[in-house]
Image 1 (tube, rainbow, N blue to C red):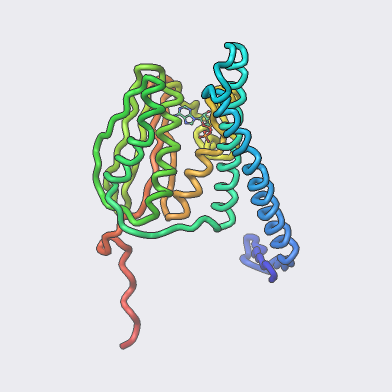
Image 2 (cartoon, rainbow, N blue to C red):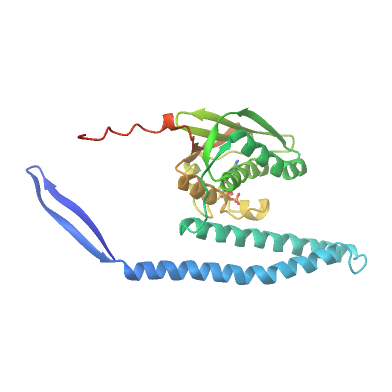
Length: 271
Ligand code: ADP
């Protein structure tokens, strides 16, 4: 395969030539494929021993060998928390790889946005309760056309972040509203917020407002990159607006299924 790019050469008299570049893509494709295989093999090889480490630590910490003295208990808890974080990181790396290489299976079906929002609120309720944050559903409008599990994953990332960055006693609100040919999901929090110069960057892999965010808050730095890949692969877009310390809203759109909303096709010529 050959990639061709062409750029016209123009001056004030008009176009008088073009630069055409032919590039052999075979090598690049091979490198991409090797990278993607490497990532998934390594991730799977890491996951298996990690599962057994987590299992053993879980048993120890649960008192399977009798009660531990407090110092040992603390060490086991730290080790358990770290191995859980490593598992999340590996899972996220695998998701990024599958999403960017187009290997994430995506179903396309109609769903009530309210059902998806409820699913997310339910899944996030334990973390929210632990953080002392109140989760609320606002508007719950619309039907969407997309993959339910992936939409839930994208929305759950946003809700988990909103909870993480809210103070105890804070409120997080989730809405879905119809917006033209799309349903717009949004997650509002009143936590720390995001400075203006980071509003785009946070969607890139491993980009954090504060370099200690992933470590201290138990994140991986991949959540928003995953949400963005999911949303864009369904034909939507994702963005954030923030007034630091006052209000932060992450939003994304997913197409609605209604046929009358699809752009009109030009009438067939001739006949
Ligand atoms: P992480 O695993 O670190 O949460 P994400 O990709 O989900 O990774 O988020 C990237 C960074 O964006 C976070 O580390 C944090 O700095 C910032 N961020 C995300 N959501 C919020 C929010 N609701 N309020 C403040 N900062 C946020």
